[in-house]
Amino acid sequence: MKLGKITSRSSRPYDDACGTAHALELVGERWALLVARELMLGPRRFSDLRAALPGLSANVLTQKLAGLEDSGVIRRRRLEPPAGVQVYELTDWGLELEEALKVLGRWAARSPRHDPTLPLSAVSLMLSLRTMYAPTPGVRDMTVAFELGGESYFARIEGGALTTGRGRPDPADVRLTSTPEAVAGAIYADMPLADAAFEVGDRGVFETFADLFSLPPKAG
Figure 1 (tube, rainbow, N blue to C red):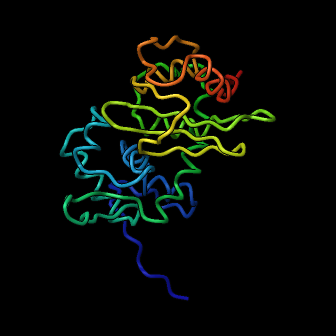
Figure 2: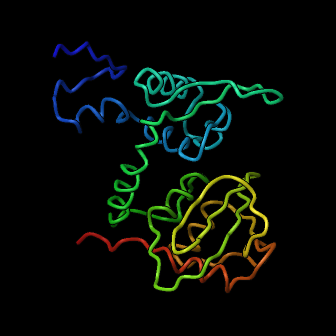
Figure 3: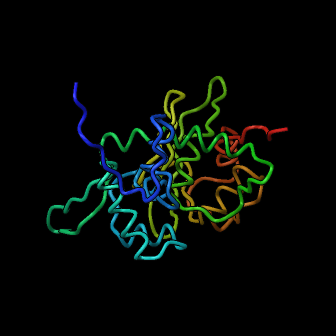
């Protein structure tokens, strides 16, 4: 079978048949994988991506989006009226990156230098919950709603399975307004959340939820 020429926007190809090498050509350049991460919970506008990745300039974001689109990882589309705005979303193949992100994130969390209290995006927080979920026998069903930076997210446990996503669930066992780093600090570093953060539910219910997530042990 004759293979067609495979192109890549990577400026420094590895010329290596290893799948890992080609993965790095596709998403291994600085910021590319984080841009893909921010699309894991659904389509985002250019401005949404800029807000979630404040260290990324508009020009570089434009370049990364073009490269990911050229590689078939993401695509552009225009939402139906009345929104009518252009958004970026992962292709079906691009969505398969989630498992790689989770494995890589769990591995990196074992680094002694990993600090779970550093700033992170709301999408990154939701993906961390999917990664670090460690259910106990008989875990109760619950829905936790988060208002993070003016956007709504949720984590739902049903029949022992966890789902996270964007949106405002109603009802919710716990509803709180905070920042992604404050919630991550409360879950992974036992840092207190202000009482004012809780709109619905109480600290005890949230602590029951937080106990279901834990970072892996540090590497020796």
